[in-house]
Image (cartoon, rainbow, N blue to C red; front, side, top):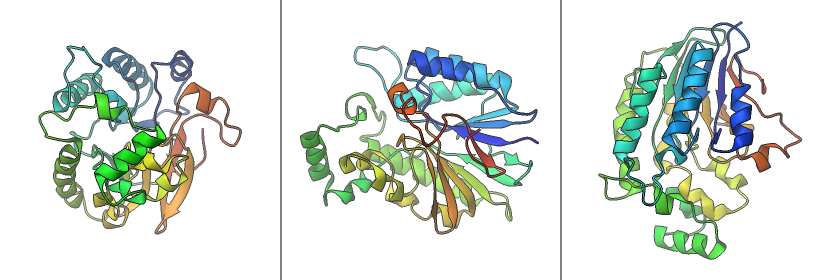
Length: 277
């Protein structure tokens, strides 16, 4: 029986995670694999991981994380939108589906379901959990020492800010989801959670401002989601909002996944519904 699997935050820049990815295999012919971003920071490592997994799984889908969009200081690599488009080109050459491609329909057990990889970023609106303005929320994050690396290495070019890039992506994505085939539920795939609820589990609440946008808080209802799949938080778990299943599927950094006793690191079965595989 084929399964729609998902995993996120592979961070194959780390040797232990690279070995973990080398061991990933489908469980049956026809298995699909969703990658919810943060595969790697370097383009070379990103391409290595996607080539390996695309060769093994019947279909691979990718939604970008923030780490793929980082451009190191002094690097001559593309940044901002141009970097994202470069990653999309790599995916297309490897046969990996991206947010720029038509959404495929999972016809296996638990389907049919339209699987929609999304690229939405964040607009700091989750920062309302700690302060009424972006400036104050950023100040509190600096004071707490939990400033996201994006503030220094994730460039929004040609947009004036990351929040403007986020809002442009939301405007572009919303009509695509609204125009999906009628009568088929969705699996919404995004690196960041679509609503603020999951960020309440963060050890440092100041970090929530880099975790999504309130503009998508009702998308799981509006777009008939049977599941929402995300990563970024490095808090793997299943939760429910408005009767919809939310799956955080992060692997995370070696120091994190190696010490978890409550969940085995691995792919999560999304359809049909199941636990870690």
